[in-house]
Length: 53
Length: 188
Image (cartoon, rainbow over the protein chains, first blue to last red):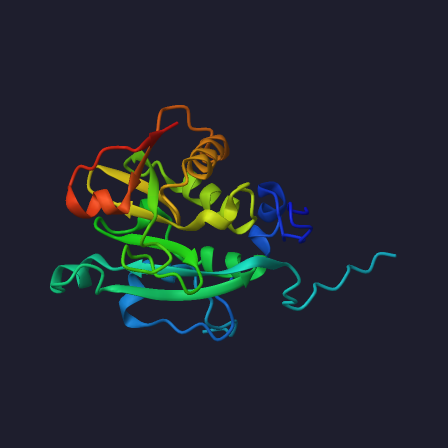
């Protein structure tokens, strides 16, 4: 979309954004988990390795 | 051809208008700290659609966070505190939910913000979800509380995005500093 000043704003509808939901399930590359925020993380979902046990 | 298309490598191809930072206020750290706000920690800053989902998909939904936790998502460089220079003259709209009922509205709030769906998006500082024993509250923080037209527009649009039909109120941070139960300055 374009705002009143003629500047293009990067607008994305909810439906558009939701299309990407299932594609990005791993934590961002280089993400560092600091101790104070670990309680916010759903640790069981974190894929740290694809290797077998 | 029967060949499957190759999955693209993690190409970050959908930049957002703004960079945003998730912050977490950890309830167990909070109880040990004297000064309010001293236990708020940044989790991660993202500036693409892909970066958002990579983080969102790996942090707890509000219904899974411990009672007392606060999860914030604010424009980068704006701290989720009244004292932040961008927030100082601002205020917040608040929507309250029964326990474990805020997950979808929290997501829709985040998507509306990062997707720049608010006509007065420049006014927005960020959003916070407060997880408490009886309820969860989502707050939408804005910059210029005195700008009634902008705040009312944001409040109305927010209710539409959440499909929320009850009245909501806007509180000035300046009032909240002085009074534990500040009066709503605007309602929609």
